[in-house]
Length: 408
Image (cartoon, rainbow, N blue to C red; front, side):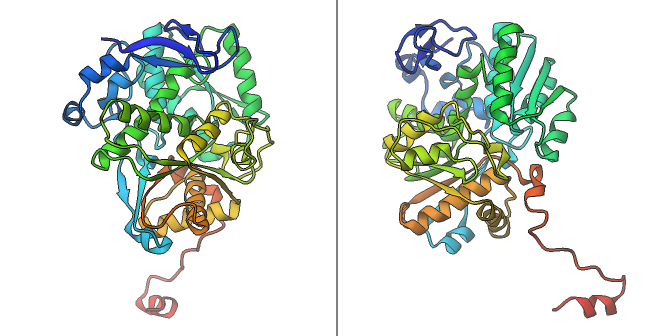
């Protein structure tokens, strides 16, 4: 049974059929999936969700497929970790990590959106998928499309971290490294998408693909005993994740799956690429594009497609936005690792660094529940910390050498 009415323009409200479309032909606004919430409310209950397999598809009525899911059957339901050591360090009462650094199969939240995109692409009859990526999406499309038996073309900036390049090439896609930043890569892909009949997951399949991010929010609420947290801090690149987390929480409230929604949502970016944070702080409705210059390459999108909607999310929820320097990103990565045993990539360093700053500023109270979004694994961005950590102590294979070199 389908719970999708079709697509709807986020700006003018015009409706469209369920097709591989992403832009309104009248106002050029972005399209998003329109659901029949009344039908969903009659079907979906906490008990039904809790009885299903522990993956992202336990909320399948709220995801944009018409049949059964075909991809990502082992994706999602990642840990929500009570970070008691970090609570002491930051001086707060209740802090959690939503840890997608262990997501299946490629260790980032992008596995969620790709699972939806590929399931939908197959419903539309595509045999080839493609994407523009800053790294994590490239890994996930390459891996999941390989399992699905789809041809895949992946476009990345040529200066991407080696770990993410290897993490894509291992799945044997056609990987194209473009001499330019992500925004230039994305523009090229938009041109290619108009000529070739491929399912570009973050272009013509984007309205469906983006909905996968909502599962991040659904799981947080369920793992908190069907309660929304008071504060949630989200890293921002194109701005889609933060908007979909907010949409997901609002859907749970609309359907009666959570009793109250008083969550404040916070945007986190690196100083070297912070157009969303700038817009929030300037109370502007215009996103001013920037040229990225940061170690947080997975967030290095200078002209975010959903930037203005990210700003709206922050304002609507009553949250705020903050940025951190590359040095603060590295320190946050190290802090998370030594306190909670979680090795995050640079995006997670941004999120924790911003969380720490917002608590210090008094923007986030110390006595309320806080969720920090960890969206990717640090093994992908080892270059960021390689020169900022200690070195092994070399000794000879003797007890004497051990005692001479190691202080007990």
